[in-house]
Image (cartoon, rainbow, N blue to C red):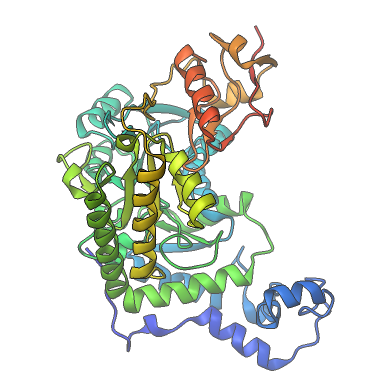
Length: 488
């Protein structure tokens, strides 16, 4: 399902952007914050960002509404976003989709509530669980052992989790995963709603699903109750701008209260206006935009697969369950057959060929394709990959695959994170309960989360990922030579 709007519809309006344009013409003398006073107080920053940018980096005022309690132009812009995405309500978020995910989880869960979720979630989900004191019930995803990636949630696994935990308040689903994998969201919604549970969708990588009928089903179309949507990824808005969507069964006022627990009271009008303009662009032109993106990604897949060795995968992975659908805009390449880890190819593309891909893990790279890309850009990537295979490839190399390691959960993340702890050398942490995260970022899926047992397999993974050059984050010790574990 896609939502298409005529240029003559009200989706052609951009109320917040239009209000900012009127504000600029008014030539109001600023005796409020921000202190740069339309850029005059910081010439160097103004030269860097431009006068037009500084003119609209303004404070909340009556004519421009207030993000914490919108009643005029922000409210109108949010209503247009809700219509464009097929939601009952939409909320402008300026803390990234991390803030959207946290608001979603905090809306659904109270201390002690159980929430069913896949373990291969972004750290923002587990952070929200930790903040509100909810108890995660993990559905372990299947894995593709050849590609070394997590797949989606199987229907039977979700049904079993719901049956075993009937008091759970919500089910959270990735739609899609960072690797483009989609679960059978409509069926999961039906299973959850039969037991009175909310369905929350992390759609950080699914903005485009709302505007192209040839892409997987969006959360709102599937009947989900809430969705966190990264407009700044495939939607074209500025980095850190996001949308939170909700259905008719969720209280608009309560969601706003939850958002205001953590979101800034000084919402950036640069970010909000970018949401307004990007929503208008997608509502009016999203079908043609994402048709172009799909075609460009498919061209890249075909050309990379013609190189030999690499495997750029797509919808052929679909199996009707754990890979119910696949996001064709994702240009993912498995590098293991050429004898190189994904992170090695990622580094070579940047350092040797001036090409920046989205991420490299132990077995794959992701080239993020958007409307801003050109055929010649994709051809440059293809040529670089061919040369990397010729210059650096070592088929038959003994490489670890980034397979999912099923966690051994000893206690809840909140209890572990705030518990008494001790710092130990990494190898001496074996058999202890971790109190912090360890992950490669991106994609930001923890290999260890607070409350989980440190095993030899996990230690080996961390050491291997560090040796290959993965960007490891999470622990208090930035070098990840030590781990914080529960004090015995």
